[in-house]
Length: 463
Ligand code: URP
Ligand code: ZN
Ligand code: ZN
Image 1 (tube, rainbow, N blue to C red):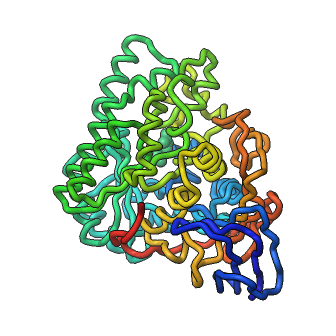
Image 2 (image 1 turned 90 degrees about the vertical axis):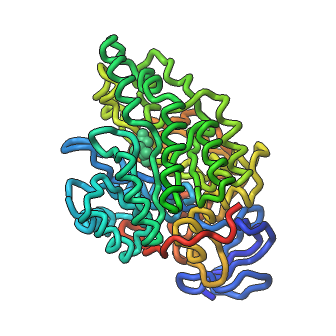
């Protein structure tokens, strides 16, 4: 074996036990005791876990000719690596192309030679005309086995019910999973028009025009359409108890319905929008918005009850200067927050340390379940012999004060500025190579690979 990691506690979605890990080349070769190897990595006192999988990022998202999310595939994946994530599944927008295949090629070109960790894509569908519906098969053949549809952003990317139904039916036949952004775009536009008419321009109106009911209704509707199509469905960035309840009822009906939430909805709440300081409030503008704090308990419970299966980030950072485009009109504030670097440590600190999650829950939600749902398991999301040697040696005692200056994402603020977390990655390996050593990034641009994913199959176990 080339590397043996000794002395650590192995944390898998499947269980927690002391074990050594042996690595040969890019793969886990053995899990056991008294392994012999070339380089010995001492992990006493540390947790050894599979590299995180963030199934919701927007690296390189273009929102027009002069506006893009502030992380490209290099800076965003360096941030991911430093925070213990070794695979991202990024949203591939249509980039102005009529053809999905051309759009996917453009996204492959954005990532190749830049990403420092492995990656895949979900293909966004904004115009499900017959040619596009036909072309979905070619996308699946390339190993991109999930699509995204939005019920918000009317006139830009929003699908109507008939269009979503067609996408769901086609995805069902192709064994692909449809990820849905569930907010009622019609209702939001009505509320925005009323605010405009009343001269209400501050960031707080972003939240007030995207109420929980808009999410609850769209979640119910997406689930109903998936039921009618007999298709599996994955609801992204769930924020509130009503949407959780809709998902739980769909699951009780026997639907293959899955959900994701994000650290910002578990840990932050709508009070941030009350700040009189535009930069502060605008920094938290994302869609759906942060909610009333009472929702957080329902989200945490949904994670341990198995109603919500994954914690992604919706990493979509912008700088303060970019956010300032909306100083006089909240609808012009680019939507999104940074989060890819802080996901695994925040879930450890506020989940595991504060007694809301077990160690295995933590790894299941941040690595194993995304791998199972998105066709990466057991290559990724676990550390079984034959799995990619993507792993994190996590120091549960290391204290870090979160602050934009020390984080690697290309933003000039952190939504968690000043928060102290205990527990941070010490070393991170991708396919047997160190990409983070003693907390320092040591990987290289282009070290990450596109990972073709298998078609969707109902996972035997997720909870
Ligand atoms: O505000 C957000 N979430 N921006 C990214 C795009 C999306 O809706 O997921
Ligand atoms: Zn979204
Ligand atoms: Zn998103």
